[in-house]
Image (tube, rainbow, N blue to C red; front, side, top):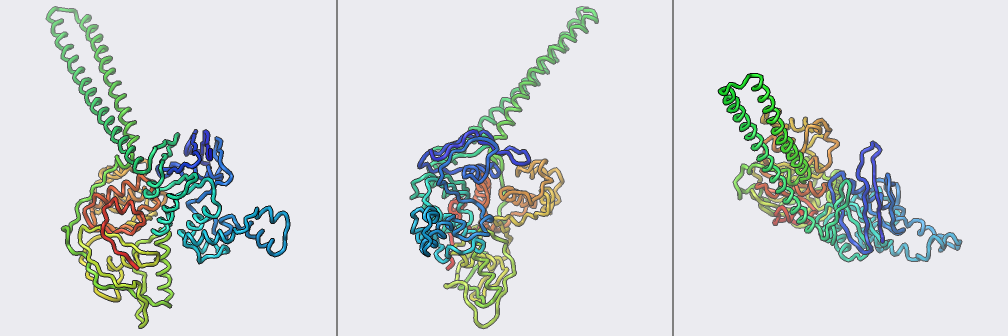
Length: 566
């Protein structure tokens, strides 16, 4: 058995229990996707399995040749590619032997791996890194290139077990496709933490991490999603049944109390007519009140039990089921022409420092996913000699209600095109006409959220309708921000929380935009948060422009049109 964990627990230094008493096993040849909410401990569990982090308690059995691909690479910035891949010691031993140092130590380190350099160079080349020598510093690579380095390590080391933590986060479309093809061909053991639903659909089994257990689902992500939907529907039905029983219990309690009160009044009147002494009447009344109180208490206890059971079931509902986002329709009628571009292009001076920075930023944004909102910092050089950004000028028409995807290789000018569409830049060739429309730019950082604000302050910042305080708080609760979190700094929010707060603010302002511009919006989100934004954009009736490497998301929100930049 490649991996076995027994009674694994992990407690943060602040004494918060992340998970406890987990039992988990992966057999030889199994390929599993590991999912769960943000903060449930998926990455921590992977680090524990990889031996990068010690558990608070429990036992782990793992193979010696296990290979781990982390989500973050900052700890490798001081290393070369060879050092990060842990082949530098073999490389040094090989060079020493070739130089005449035939020591036993060098031969032991090399372990007959005479083609280590050739194999490593070939692996890097197959992952699109053929231009980088093994001595190249890791800190000079983009996020996507660092990911590719560690993916190349799989081919170099050929391990029996591989652990991957969000491997597609920083990859462009070509890199993702290369990984998808590799996963389909791989026959050894594989455990993947990912929010990439295309990747998860390639894995035959999904498991879900919760606080006290790992649940297995015998199918890919689509199967897992179907099973979770059925479970949520069954849960919702049980909640409705409890609510019906609760209404009945409260009605019976009320009717019983009213009926006993009427009986008591009638009995007292009869006894008065019979001339029953007052002292006896008082005794009968006290006895009746005790009986009524006992009966009422029994019904009240039943109602309280049903209430607790209902609330417990409600707490098990997923955020996707609990949260409903309903934007108003765009103020523009469907089919209204918003943007018309005729043979447009954008020029830059090849020797301009600013242009160089602009192009590098384009490349890094596309590859690493570190997008910023469109700005007007680009400098259009007016010198005679300019290099055109696109080999072929671009022509398109964008209408209200259209759903458009902008595609292209790293540095192809996707962000520049967005700036042209939003009138932050002007084309230097061709004609571009733009009607007035409102838009909201959502990037993976959800930068419309001000990190200096608390959650409540952020909500008030969008209260241009002067809603009363209680209505703002009702909307915050609707978006899963209870009173206990209102003072929390926006800086501490996860990607999914920022996404929910962004939509919450738009609802408070009642400002449904004519257009949503989405720049890698699913990066750094967990599955449930992705389901929320997918459902929100899917039901939105306005215009959508998306830059995204998440093909599953693009398909789900119904994008069919595209502009391919080259």
